[in-house]
Length: 236
Image 1 (cartoon, rainbow, N blue to C red):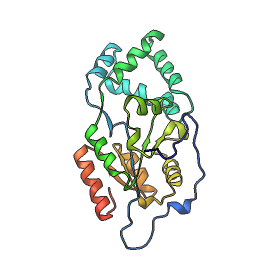
Image 2 (cartoon, rainbow, N blue to C red):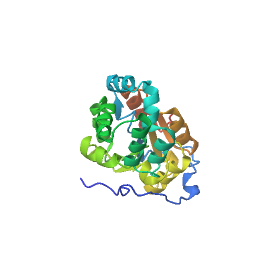
Image 3 (cartoon, one colour):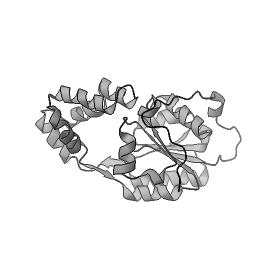
Image 4 (tube, helix red, strand yellow):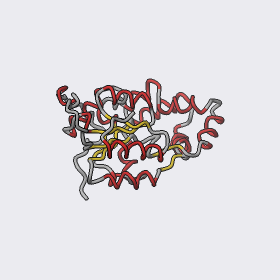
């Protein structure tokens, strides 16, 4: 099945949006859901085996949270996830911080992500949501994310759109990213449900009027989402 339009790879994607579109409807009838947005890292793709990261952290004389902050956060990580710098430049910054040789970077990256696994049961469930709903991914990720999602993880057929922060020039929980997605989908906030594992991202989505499900595990998330889809109740 052909995919709906996707944001071009590694191109900052900033749309002007009509704030009137983001105002929830005021009628008392349940508002039907038209789109479901899923975060990817920590939801569909999760670090199930912590041992590779623990071994790396031990080798560099740091804790796992410190290593993860270096890989994902800080000034360099935030810049990469907003498309200000490339993923390659970010990992060069990580290499310098860890005092690695250039020929060690690929092996360290492979080990760092070695414990990640795709939740195939959740992916199967997501596939069942189409074509009843527009299904999209909204992920804070770097410029190399799209090829990995399509080629390594092979999840492209489950989604109508892949919204990647580095390609959009903004990242969650910035409210602009939710407004931008809503504009692209031509939907009101109350017509969408957003699923994420970080509470601050959930709260930001709710602040613009979207319904939301806070991911803690697959069974809980599917159950909470189905309640919203069936009853039109506002999620928490």
